[in-house]
Length: 105
Image (cartoon, rainbow, N blue to C red; front, side, top):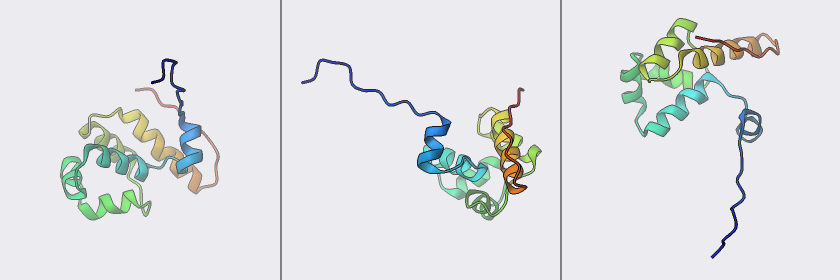
């Protein structure tokens, strides 16, 4: 039995990105779905899009409009500004523009 405090590992966004890659809208959406333990079909119904569109988002083949990202976040009970900023950063990366986005809502 150990009586001392266990070593705590702190993960910030930079540490997570080193381990798992850049945060994308697709990864954010998929991780939320997996955390909720629901199928793509159930998730698509919840956020009011087709299962194929959800699959395309999760696999990075497309990303939503900013309004759609906000609507999806709200349907999932998440902070819309966070989800919208992830989409904006992804759009900027596609244009090879290295900006960080911070939104307040």
